[in-house]
Length: 339
Image (tube, rainbow, N blue to C red; front, side, top):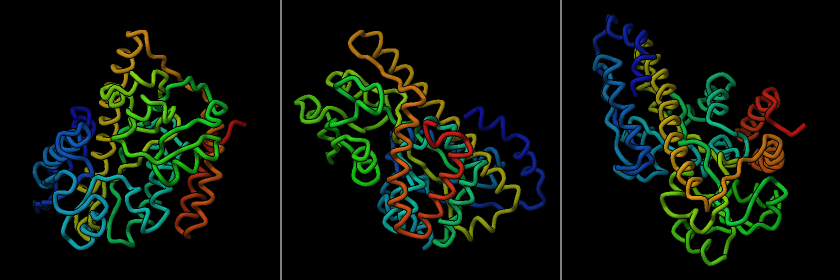
């Protein structure tokens, strides 16, 4: 979190010299449990906000399910039960499929920096507020635990190797995209992934980041992970009550926005460091082969995914808006296809 504090020094100075000495106290809820590495990093962000604002903004961060269920925080913020949250945006896709599409457009991103560029410079932040403000929330910024790795018991060098692959994937867009790519996805709870891989019920799994997969022993039964992953990277939003956001002085709004951007990079760096250490450990053992798909194969998968995005886009006007903005950005950035 040192980087966060250093890079926001100028904004913090503005806060210290501001005419208004009004203090603001907020209660946020995370979608991660206490003790989880993500929650620990989020807690560091909340503590840094107090320091950056000379105590003018205090944020109490609660772990998941503390006051409401993980998928009820949006309503709780609008009702004033919570002031804000740090959560996976896809939890609210039941309200509007647009939330699911922007939260995890499977295959869109090959690195966190690509998503951050879209959010901060490509219209993503504005798009999030178009979606959230009608529900009484304001989007402050985005973070992510990073691009998920892919667990496999067989070598996977590209899209062609997905043909007929028996794999675990969560319901929804992830399953849709993998099925369109030729795989045979099934819905299994996380608790059954290890056993299913070990018994050959499945050959591969969409699960989580490399370091967690390694810690849980998945590579012992599936020694051909794809890292960095090519498919899933969740958008984790930091948002708060719209009226309370509007009541903040502009200097504090700027500090909060910058603090989230810096926190996001710190989180990505910390988790990437854990992943890299786990990758080195896996390679050193000599029994695990780490596969890194070339850019053209990632682009092929992305091209397949866009067809499924189109289906989601048909389900609401907002989803169509997300699709249009996202695909325009990816096309202009040269990320949309293998051509």
